[in-house]
Image (cartoon, rainbow, N blue to C red):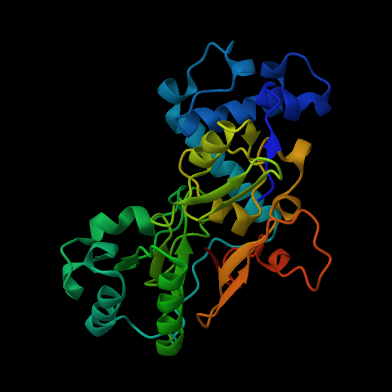
Length: 307
């Protein structure tokens, strides 16, 4: 990913200058950003510090209802439906043999399952992996896998493809559209263990990291080198960079730095059959061949899992 020099200017002011307003706390944009920031349990940005109301402590239900209403309105405007479709009978129902196979691949510590499949957890322990942030959709997956490498992801996906087992890739589960949770009993592939920052090049402004890196952790790391990640979200304290890429996340720096289609320099992706596509590159300009990475940015995991 291409990262930018940190100019030490106020983050929000830089993004809001285009609106030509001085008193940001009185604009709808600032109110919306402050609301989301407060709801996620994070400190408001400096230019909003004059706001007297602590929304997080005084009006948590109001904030949540506001975001929920906004999200549902967005769904309705797109003509989408919140109704759950019936389970596709083409997909196999999970068995204990399948779970044992995953344990042999990843180790028992990286497999979260219920006693029904030889695990030590209850269905309640898996709720946070099954329930969407807005709680509109909740699946009933009984298996959560935590791969530690791209090779682990490849083995999981290949096995599930061969056995016709449905899976859902999951990052920080902060999305408002419930794209990272199961609808029925899909196997959850959670990327939180893949959280290493591989390299950073101060001269070219490029960082290579795993998909499970938390956005705020990554931004803090590059800031030590005088750089910044061109994405900033209300959920930055828990969302994953892989999820940001897979959803083409915007945030309050979008107006200044553009979308991730322009910032992502290369990707490593596991395809639905388990094939690993290594398109990692730190070149700012590459005119050779097809720009494969653009297919996966914003694809929501439907074409492959970004690792």
